[in-house]
Length: 383
Image 1 (cartoon, one colour):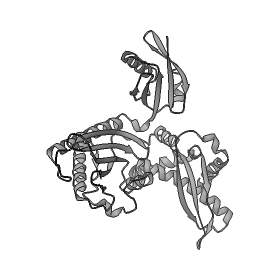
Image 2 (cartoon, rainbow, N blue to C red; image 1 turned 90 degrees about the horizontal axis):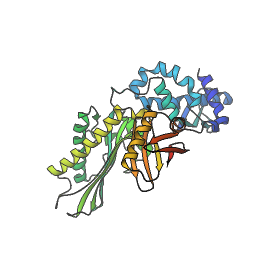
Image 3 (cartoon, rainbow, N blue to C red; image 1 turned 180 degrees about the horizontal axis):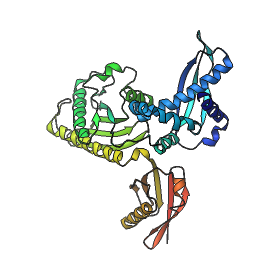
């Protein structure tokens, strides 16, 4: 089977341009074989790398327990259709080893198609099993040039105290919604992770979440900045992210004045209230997105040109959702004098929706579809 899979995937080196649609990610896979013949070894290693790349991504997406539980189904229902998942792969230099050969292979995987395949096969989503969440929140005091993050060795005790308090408050608020948040600061996770700097890149986030088997992370920064009536403010910008899907589930932003003469590290009742409010808001958004199956959907935009009244906006939203039942959410994101922009969560892409929503009646007029992009539908109001 592996050899057959490799021949199919290898053909995509030639025809990769035909599979350009959808979001993709690239992985570098190092593989070895005991095969002595160089030509045969190259084929074996390419087969092995392509299969391993897909298996690794499925394992990250589902989690190790669900992956193991569904291994047979993944082999028969996912890997046998892998030819549609890899638009491009590139083999590196073949190196001779004492036992055989080794090679690095760059593999590009269409994650949208993989997600849809997992959904279609009933493997992707278990709404009754909320994920474990890993907080990755950086703390920065811009008024005193100090910073702290649990994954670094920075010893700033004041910011560390606030970080630990927010960690505990978040655990309580998310637990109320059925989510379990890890406590990396309390249990000294930093000792097991020494690779990343203060600023986390995508690969750092993936490594940390994989290390703790956490599909969802809390990302963002809490900053102490100059300003406000008391001279200093606390600015919190946080969001929850589903790492395998790279989907934002919840997002909060607050800016509150710090109490006059407040000492960094001392947790006042007022500060604790701020932490609780932010954590509760983020937990509510996250559970709402999780329960409605937002992870199964993609995020798209709808732009309507023209100045619309609240009644017209409501009529358009109702009319659109009546025609497209698959749309899970449709909400206004930006309203100005020239257009209204909506955000839509849908498992169906805009190009597949276009025919059903070419016109939306709105009062005495209608919204006419003028343009269809990969991630956006554009309408114009007409009488």
